[in-house]
Image (cartoon, rainbow, N blue to C red; front, top):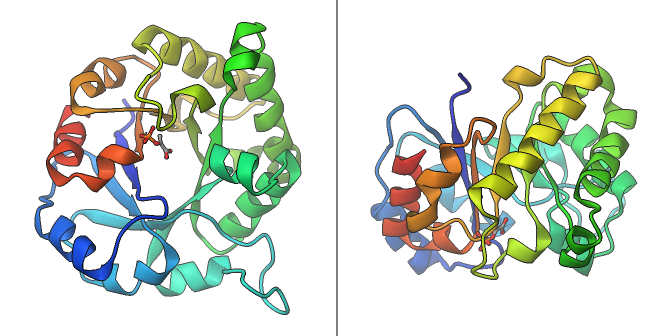
Length: 242
Ligand code: PEP
């Protein structure tokens, strides 16, 4: 049985004062790994956070160091004690032009620095309606696998995040999530990695009232939580459901 991971993605939200209030309302949840993926400027503030909460970022440069104005390297994230970094979130793919190869390179740069990339994959509504869910997510995974190989693949956390479910209030049903997760695990097994130990998180409008049902699915190993991670009571309830 894989220990569940719940990762909060604060996106571009927060302020020093708001973060302080949120952190003060968080309590450790035994038996579940919990991570907070915060905007870069708040990594310093999060050096002081309640015990039991790992630190993560929401993006990382594909480059190691040098003349890349505006970029943040994986080594800088480890300097601040990050364990995780989200890579290939659909907002980065859609709004910032990240393609499958860039996502793979970012995952590689994170792994090289000892970070655990949380690699996001997922289909748009049009792709789902065209029956392309498995084709899209395996294409996205294959780009990462091609660059990282079996060994790298086995060190990732994956997140299935259907684009239409993110921030929409319309979660995938537990059955839809399970179907996609099972397909991903089957694909991983086909790559020759020990698919049974790779965490596959679900993300997309997870709330306190649907978390338990989603997390009860055999192939759902936790969640990537956007909006609800900004509300302490909701985030705590989701963590407790895991
Ligand atoms: C996300 O940002 O990864 C996400 C899943 O957002 P939300 O929970 O708000 O849908």
